[in-house]
Image (cartoon, rainbow, N blue to C red; front, side, top):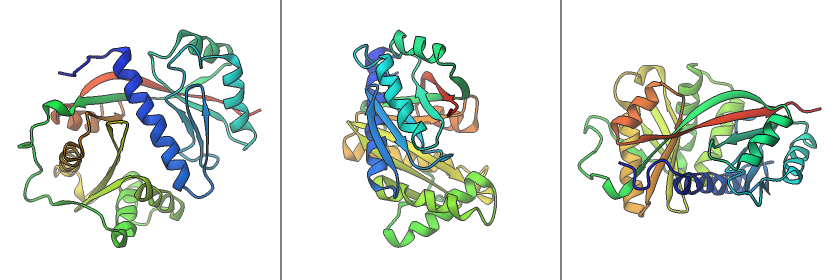
Length: 260
């Protein structure tokens, strides 16, 4: 069971860790910018980039103001980008009112899965047949190519996607298995697991489960108190995380207001 349950204290903890990860990512991504706004982090990493969105926003009444919304939107609009925000359902009610008033549209839902590391069982390990390792700098191109293949299903993924993946190696740990890769960052005592991708030849062989287990072991060794991941509802990824002791904490909604 989760240590605190699905409550506002845990949601604040997870959302704060996401915002901290956004600031760290912006620091190492060429051309990226970050703005502290709405109590979270607005990231711009290029128009249309999946890294361009606001994280951890609106969790307290002091930050949930129309003026803060104006600052966030101007940050994106000045860069010819739509305004994008990933919103926790336990955000302050004033944020929901502003989202509605400003005509934001839902573009995606993500299930936020989490587990306490206090109950982590070191015996829960990857199969010996599936070696997982933290990559060295020399292995970064292989990791980027493998993960890009996993996301696109293409033998030769677009160069811009492979290049974008390289930034992950600079602000977190990247893990590589035969046929798949994933990453992890630890912020404010929370291990954020992300970037999970399995190339076509690795699917159905337990690759993602092995990557989850390897990252949990690393998180436990680093002293993380929680681990979390965002997955598509009802996906194979959600089932794999559930098998690793994760539970659904809340569903996050991804919202967009089109640029003027």
